[in-house]
Amino acid sequence: MFANDRGCIGQGILVGCQIDPPGYEAAAMAKAGWATANLAARQNLAVAWITEIDDLQIIQTKPEKFPKEFSPVSAKAEGNTVVIEFWTVDPAGMEPVQVFRKHKVVFGADGRAGQSSETDRVDVRGG
Image (cartoon, rainbow, N blue to C red):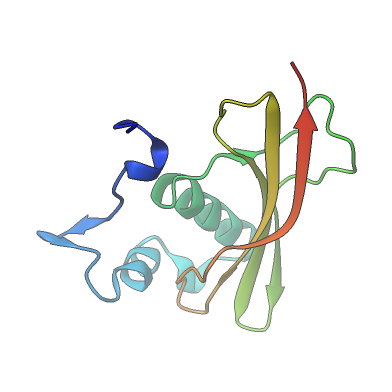
């Protein structure tokens, strides 16, 4: 058993003595200014949410030995939603491979983040 395995770390947001109370996502984004933010500001808010709340490390520059075209984090408006696309790398494991994943997250009109979907994956072997 790996007591410190990343998969064993519990996650939750403590708000007013409750863990993950209903509606906390929209309330937090409203307080941060989501409703009046332009696309660039919404991208910054979304990236802050993804890195600070969802605990994902976004890769901003093309990694060494990355075998395909790389794009840094991007945001685009689709109706009342904002679509964020970005790359991450999995934590190191026991095999000599880096696993990069491209994610897409749709933030609703109220700033609430939808489920992250994986849109691409690249395995880079090394040693």
